[in-house]
Image (spheres, rainbow, N blue to C red):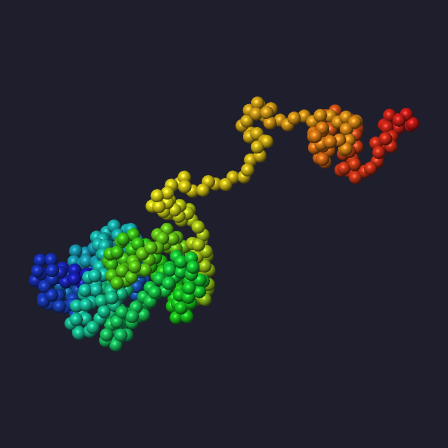
Length: 451
């Protein structure tokens, strides 16, 4: 609508019978501008005439006054396409413009205009036209020609225009031809590429359901691949779908804000009524990172794009199946609520089992008196008269000691005053496997004397 507004401004400036701030659209000047025959309104395409030569020619022509109208108006469309040299040449004219000349510069990328040019212009920012307004306008045009159309189909056409009435009208003409005079929702979605909604719903449901198989998760990607769809655009549309789903689950259901028909909003709200918002956010951020990777890798082959999407979705499904802290806390809270509803309490739960603690071993915090109390009684020393044939009742301690084996029995003999040499002999016999009698081993003193 930038060029249209520029023409309206040119008509108002040169109108012979203005109606307030509006042109009359009846005088000779207005009619000549409407049919494009005015000699004082010059339109220049900046994309086609972006060099310095057309701007030099413009500088020469601005010197001449208008032929019929009050003002000479130059409309430069897509002015951001001009080269640096062309901008510098135009700047000379903008610094000291003739009184009879008005320049109107139209652009969609204001950031590409040099600051020296912007500082000498009055800037007007145009807002996008609301979807509802475009949809109503399209309905009025179709009613005049008696062309039937579904409301949802007109909504998708208006959305495809992205706030531009001209683009929406272009898609409407295509839809009339494609649908053979009867605009239907399914055909319009197929025409403009809005056919992913069912596929996105299946992918999201498979990711949220831990019982879903890999085939359920990857089948929509295979359908998009076999259908010849642009998988790069597929990723972007899925990201938009997740954004809308997140807002819908947060009770934001304005069709204008979501750019969705009310039927689609109600369907998504019902389908994912009990979905976990945390998991939806995880899916959203993962798909966003996938889109960034796809952009950085610059994948052009659709098979490479398919592999990237399948690997990322498989990894995401495995990640979502892992237990999260919030999920564990939710289960604990649910168990607690269930106990409270049943009239129970935490005390009714069985105690946590612990390993048995030996009673003869005092705990680390026990005092010296407790340690002395638990110390075992000393074993009486053996006498030569005691043997294996003695009654167990007369010598219980000796019987218990003889029943023992290993280093504990040897240590007990030593502690009770036994011969140290005999204890060493027992150690050699049990652990070194030798049966050499200690008496057969020559003494160290005798060995020194013989030497």
